[in-house]
View 1 (cartoon, rainbow, N blue to C red):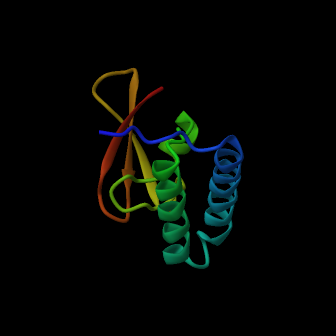
View 2 (tube, rainbow, N blue to C red):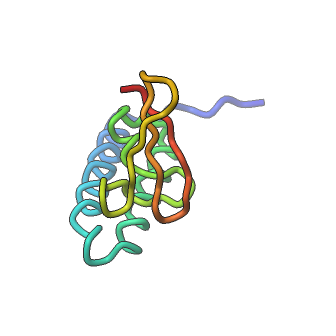
View 3 (cartoon, rainbow, N blue to C red):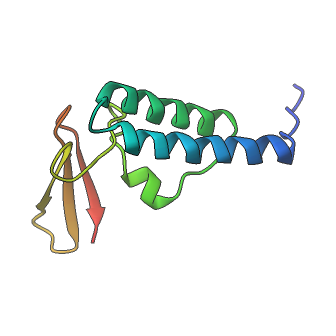
Amino acid sequence: MRRRSKKPKWQLKIAKERIDILFELAKKELKKYPKRSRRYVELARKIGLRYNIRLSKERKRSFCKKCNTLLYIGKTAKITSDKLPELKVVKCLNCGEKKKIPK
């Protein structure tokens, strides 16, 4: 089988810029248009998967992987403590998915 060639650097640069723009738009649109915000997060994730771009830890933790909702404490997310003192649990208020994050 033939190996796929790597994407050119200029394409990866543009993809990273678009991911940044989409996350910024998602933050802006969260309060007025939550569905649009979810769509922006979904598009950013698709671009990252297509061009094999890793998201930073902060970006990964900022949205729900199940429903693509941007996690905003108090509006779309709730933080609780776990039995283990070094973990905190972030619960998505949209779908109920729980995410354990080290403190």
